[in-house]
Length: 346
Image 1: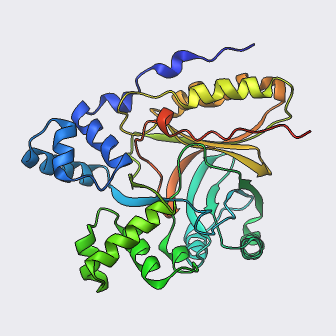
Image 2: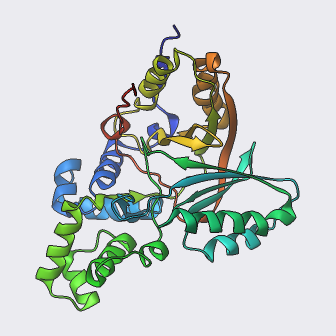
């Protein structure tokens, strides 16, 4: 049996670029972006004055947005899909950007260089709504001779895509809850007093609603989204398998690799992993020093690990973001890997 390759335990060059203090602050913001300056000071070992100054520099350098990680199913948004598109004719990216922005269903989209040209994460309130949008997009893109493959996301083992407020606006929620949720999704570092003043709602009501959203499991975490540094390679791949009896053992070794990361990484090495149903069976997005490192430690390893399953893989590197925000953060993948235990049906 192929054993896990512990070369994953190397320290990435992009993490070595930054001090442990900066890395600790980013880790804290990733798991609790509402952390006070006092908490940041205590966690980083800086004085409150220095912690505030360092936070401001980090926000600017890493293009940090304070966003919510939401439980989409608890919100009734139950149709998550990942789509890869390949064009036979050079596309007009501004035209495609306009199509995406004109709908509340796509939550993220980026140009990709590799086996496919466009990556989209989409979600909707109903399957019918999603199906109509999916077909409409294929028709609109047909002039570029598009090859369109869509897969439903079973669950996100690692990572998330920030949800756009355009979709939250359409949810069937109490007005006050929706308004507060949207403000937090716009900037979840806003304190309750700022939200109350902005929306004209009493402070006790704001505190009650925030507490309710947390208890109902709608807000999973207060986190961050960073912009992509120029020196970082974001490698994505979709994989299709013909599973053998060793598939679960191979999957276990893959999980060990996905959960391995540097201590206090600036950006999690594995940004997202998700099992799929449809055109492909699995998706991952990983952050690497270079395309060569991504090929060696991600693509080649995965191909070798699942070679018994006759793996079919489509890969590509993230380029220009057309819509939404990249889900770049540092939460510590081992602590945040979500496992679902599958039971055999008799």
